[in-house]
Length: 605
Image 1 (tube, rainbow, N blue to C red):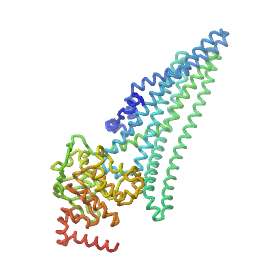
Image 2: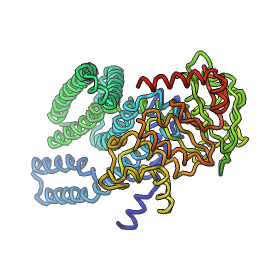
Image 3: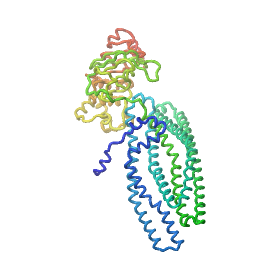
Image 4: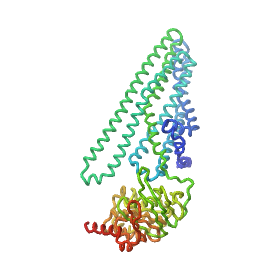
């Protein structure tokens, strides 16, 4: 690869989020302004592209004049030399189109690729900065539709704008100027083309915009439901519900087909009306110029010139009018993408305290939390003091608030009242991405990606020695099942790690947590879905993992938290009991009842 190519490939990608945020109202009301402002950031390159377009296209504008000249030379009994001069000019104009077109296409295409890459980059950054609450509220399939379909529609809009609308406008102006110089009366006739087509566009504009909005929403619904269907396939097949899922998706497909047909029908009506109107105008122009020639107002050869000019103007106006449906679709896609880019559900990082290291002292001081659309607090006046290196387990019935407390420790949720401090610092004033570099989470449902076991363990981690890596693999009990795999640590696992058992996946998750050497560790029901043998292996790995770290455990099997320094029993967002395992068993309160109930369930199983 050449140095020049390397420089181009390594250029930083544009970020348009500030442009969307600064003009939020304009995006909602007139998204076209945002697109033109994005384009204006490339004004120098675009001006050069337009200049090259004028040079490369000039033959198309001058050929009708040369043709008229040749016809007039013949009809007036002129010399052959005059015809050859016109032919030579024509040859030069045509040949220069080759290099000028290449230069024009190169600059225009590079601009369009930059804009598309910038929009995708902006979307990715925004999705990473949005809060976990936002991601729980919107289906992944809907996000995929916005990222793929809508950005592609915006790219089409920009392509049409730069390669059709602007060139067409330039052509209309250039040809109109030639006509004014040659015959103002003919130029005046040309003026009627524009208002006729404007009226046509205005007649269909609202209908097209409404139809594209409906089609876009049906597409998003289809994408969201398709994503859910794929995730549910194991459950669907296990319960023999294939036909029910097919029927559900068929209903979505029917709605999408109907919405698409309405869009197609409107475009067809618009296209036929536009074509018929402009063909009538073309015929009228021919009759008008023939009348002028018969009355000696113009030369006979000029009929061809003016008819060519008229056809050129007509075709370019029709090109603009003809791509109006695509422009309408692109503007609707801007509104769709702006639903993400204008969301205010972001984690603010500006003016936040940077975190270099943590000890692991955590204090909840009368903390309460209520979800944005909730009617009451789900955490109420919660107070708890955890010292560095302590192991704290949370137990309680489903909905008691355990997961909410864990999400607050991670920083996914922030207190609505009260105070949560980490090493004495208010978590609402901390730079959360820095803070999270010092914590690790082992969730109940292990999240793995398609890749090797080694890649999954090293996710986001660089510069680790082989010795340290091998120690972590050993500590997480991964060596126990490696001989069963074809390529050991280099074995490629399927999507979500579906080629591995639950216990194997969980041990990879533990290794991923260990390799970060976190000061704060969170185990969210890490063994609840495992059989006894897998649980034994995972529990051994966990016992190594928690040593010397402030650890929080959400427990389903109460036998796994016997050695916790504190066991917090929760109910309806409050602490109802707290103590060591032995203290709570001796007290014979809520924890004692939970333990007896879990033993009873275990005996039944």
